Image 1: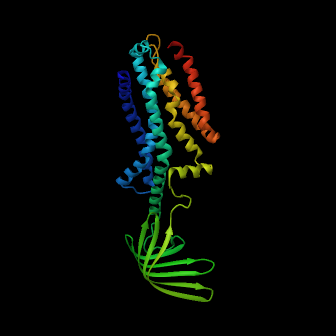
Image 2: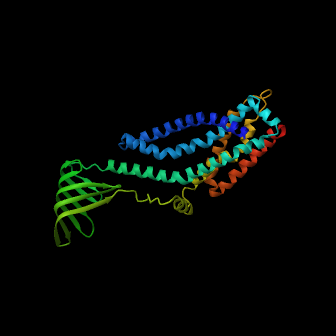
Length: 338
């Protein structure tokens, strides 16, 4: 249908400029946040880009719902301002029928946002956190040669010479209630595998003391491990397993509510879209953008206030109340005239 194509083309002309403007602003905010990490860890350009790519789903998620909502309203407002909606309405297409034309696209966008937020963002956040923790652990491990009082996990360590991750003449000591352990090694190599640091000791001796007993062990190579990974980090398997575990343990409920409620915002705001977009330019001023921003702020504030207090009940309470309020506004404004 030519009318459908025309309306979609008008929406496209509005959508892309708004989306790229908001996407650029949001990207700058996230880049500043990432750049602030350089005060704690050292990041190369490729690592900076990697962290940015992990944040791309979040950037799109926080940009897309409001962009689509604004674009639809501005598109309808532009058509109203140029009397095109009046002509379209005269041919028997009331606001509800116009809304139905955009409904398939709105549903597709809602599903895309749900996949992006509920499905993809937990994984990318996990990868980002894991990467930052790894870099912090690399930065925190800074053993220097010829210095006393340094530690590698539970071991006190002293090194005579160091060349990058190659070490010479190591002495390690560990004391506990049952025994004392003392290791001497001529050479060692530091190995970092997925955040798990270990020393490969070569050509050395181990001395173990228990009460009045001393044991000596000669070795050609030996590994001492020290897992510096966070103990409460956990492993990410699938999105379903992640949310099942989190929600069953009453964790991240507020995040889950936020993801779902923000994803469905354009869909449940359909009556507001036609209410703000329709107006008679002869008698009314174009306040579509101002009304849209007020609606976005109110919705976001309601979600932020209620999502913690009502737990998962917010997933049906807020949409129902928002739809009822939107339809009441539509019934008392646009429905009477069109």
